[in-house]
Amino acid sequence: MSARLALPALALALVAACSTGPAVPDWRLNAAGHVDRYRSAWLEGNERVAAIEFQAARGETARTGRPDWVARVELNRCAVRVASLDFSPCAGFDTLAADATPEERAYARYLAGQAGAADVALLPASQRAVAAGQSDLDAIDDPLARLVAAGVLLRRERITPLQVDEAVATASRWGWSRPLLAWLGVQRRLAEQHGDHAGAARVQRQIDLVRLPAHPAH
Image (cartoon, rainbow, N blue to C red; front, side, top):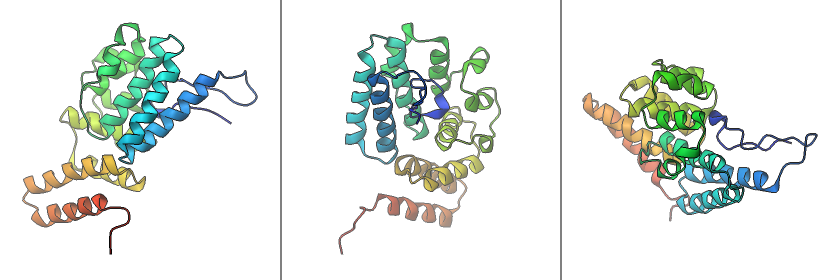
């Protein structure tokens, strides 16, 4: 049985263990579980649970006294937000950047839409093509990594309408309401900009459906 970091695309190896290997410290297992539950809650739009799980993950990791490991947890939060088109500053990571690894700092710049040529080789493999100026989202197998890449493309104003459609389809397939609403909003604006009023109305109906309570009153 393996315990992994919640965001495979980040490839940060916060936890890498199996039952036949060396014993794994409890904090790693606990932190990985909290990060995974944070990710799920955030993508599903449950902010209260997401906040609780994130603080628990950060607390477990902070007990090690390793700022670089805490920085990895913070980068998970930044990446999930970018996937949902939340481009707020990655303040939690910024306070730890001086003690982060070159790979972590490169990834933070990438998420901010500021990656340079020297950063490309330091990035997770799934994100290197986007950072290098290519934009083939189809080549990214992991759905969350694909949404992260799409978010970076949008942030850098290099995304195409077809890629927006792909981001919508990815979020929809996995039932991730938070990024789905964000990407549907982009899709609706594109339809409006092109005078496609019927298309914009269709997208708005999708938005309204996602926003409905899980059990609407009869």
